[in-house]
Image 1 (cartoon, rainbow, N blue to C red):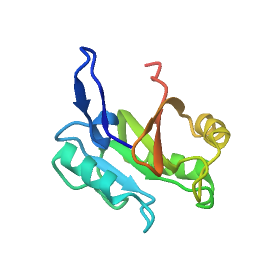
Image 2: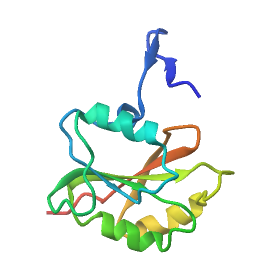
Image 3: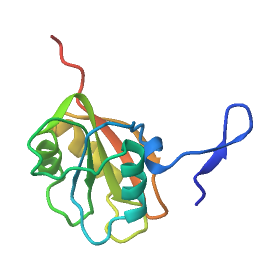
Length: 145
């Protein structure tokens, strides 16, 4: 899959995975659910975009975005999403990275749609990030205060 697509003026534009996820230089990204099967090229593109290493679950400070790698057999998705909120800044997003349909460990989109509201989140968009993985953006609804 090429990362190149047509821009609004018809010229080719190239976006890496970090840019497709709306990440910016200087953001603090927490990575959860890493395992041997993750796409390291996606990780490198994200770290290039933010110009820093991602932090792990032991970071203990506020983060702008959480990147959660998740597979069908990883356990309870609701619990994982709630845990992902621990260090997330107000207005921050969780990007849930799951294997694409038909790939080993693929997560049924209905499972994500069911788990998100239980965890207090809304699904906003889905974007392909590599040949094997897609990302679903989850956000907490705006607070009423």
